[in-house]
Length: 163
Length: 154
Image (cartoon, rainbow over all chains, first blue to last red; front, side):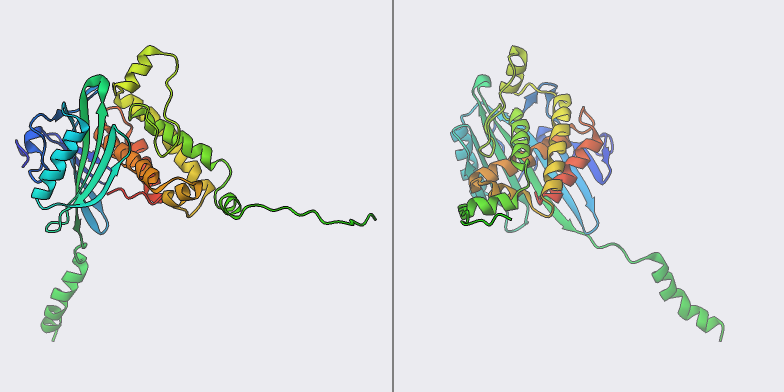
């Protein structure tokens, strides 16, 4: 999924990592319109990313992208309604806040991946933006302490030797 | 000693009493300010039923908001303010989730969804801009405050 593995900068947070991703590295299970390009803000294109968060009992994997499309909000919503259903996603939540804003959330029953999408139409820029976040939680159990392993393995041997 | 020869009866409608007893004074103002700052990132629209951001009489700033030309530094400034508001909301209403607070405020379920979504969107944005103009400590605090308010980070 990630190109140029090992040659890409990694940004370290207090509890994880962030790796920036290009359009062709976007997860294939979350469709994008062919016209989608990275959303541009005041500083330039948003830095779409793959983020890994380390928590005591889980690792959270988040892929986030902010996309811009010329299609109308209704057309974008229609695209996702069809494509996500085709890919087996189950709709969890759907809001139409106004003519210009909507949001949906999906969960995939096979993988338990969750996707959240927020859409907004910007008439002055003739574009619809989609802020998409794909999240997967991986359970984590800390390894057994090394001292316990040593005690378990060494004590019987010591007993044998000292007999 | 003057004896009172009559009793003064005051009747307060029950819902208002419940609301007044549940939310600390000033909470509504803090929610409104949070919504206004979130609105800056969404073109000035109303968030959660609260008024949208009205830019000052500055054409450049108006265009910045209207066309989302804001920078990571702008987001950094706005997150600082939002952190301040959220901290106060938490201090004033200990143990309550944001959803409970907004419900007590009389915000509808759809508006609550909008408010929470705007906060989650800000989190996604902040984590992409972290190191590009958004201060990492500020971003970290923002996520911690969201968790304290029961706003699921993931």
